[in-house]
Image (cartoon, rainbow, N blue to C red):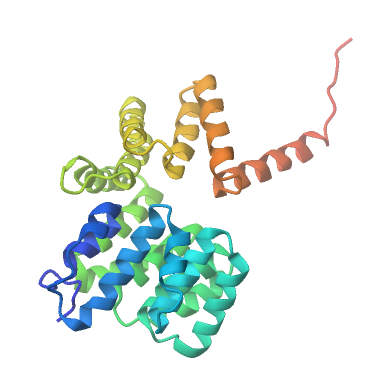
Length: 296
């Protein structure tokens, strides 16, 4: 039996992790788990620790652990600690020696994609044997490539055998946000249910709800969801980044500048800031080709 299936003993901790309920993952009682599930549960706990900002603590705690799973976790923690070279080197070694390991596939794919090595990430993730997180990551990568067709194909295939999976529903909602139309509303229902249900609410689900509200043109509702997320975690990077976008759309210049400065201080190399700088540079280059014409 699949430990992450509806009958599996890891379903609760697995869903909590992907809903962004990292404290619930850290608090999850693993004392009664079967031996085969102890390491997968510990990996999720370590990843939740990284997600809550304690990557350095994870590097230290797995320093003397043996096994490919913990080596992959260490690499992910190194990446989030700023040691990108060390993380990449570790993943490259693991790809050579343990590419069939599910944890290596997932965490290796994350690190490789973060370094722009998309084809290597997809090659590694494609080795999965029915792993839903691998499918979700492949879907996410295809969306980053603007290959909505491939992302849709990935989700459609997964739905044939895992249509009730939370992770598949989330991945389908990501695709829906790109497809648009009626799919916006379908994605909203998924994210709103997670965000507004007390047992599953988190900054992550609230941000997702806010983004879906934004796509539906419901700006006040998007603002309310983002404010709720920021009340829970004022320093959440993705909440701040989305607040910049929303404030810009709503014409709130002072708030936009405030959130932009917060984002720069928190993570100066955030993808949003990098993209913004690139587009600003392209605009300046285009504008430089023209000169103002003054009518006499």
